[in-house]
Length: 177
Image 1 (cartoon, helix red, strand yellow):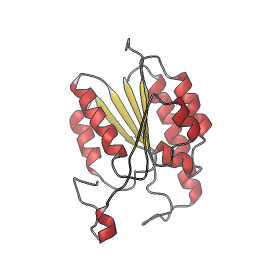
Image 2 (cartoon, rainbow, N blue to C red):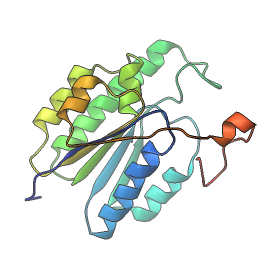
Image 3 (cartoon, one colour):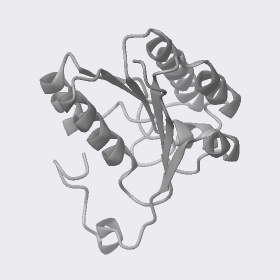
Image 4 (tube, rainbow, N blue to C red):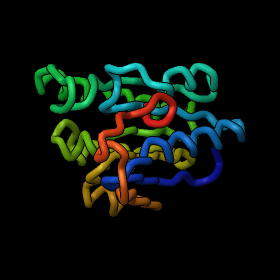
């Protein structure tokens, strides 16, 4: 890891933030890079990334640390369960990022966790500031904190133009999860 890493933010209300991060991970693994994705919100459902991660091991690791979507759909967990899971996700992200083992660490849905008050943006910024020189951090999720955006080298905002859910079309296996 001799090159400088980047801080990359994928945010916005449109679909594709996690997918963009996974695309980057796939590209990086193809170049022999080591990647870890820590998922802050997802975690209670089975989704395709879990199986794909096993196929890309050992160069790609996925840690589903969240307890599922917060306050929507079938969430029956107390808020404190989500707060604890987010704190554990942040600790795990820091351990992975500072380990020197990875070229890229993705904090999936960390921006959303921050906007929900599950994670303090100051903790995210501390990790950004303490990361090893060659590590790229990718921060995904809607409603990225302005201070996090200020620290980013690259920001992509996903904008929803049309979504099938609004026409009653449910999420599809292999496309959405």
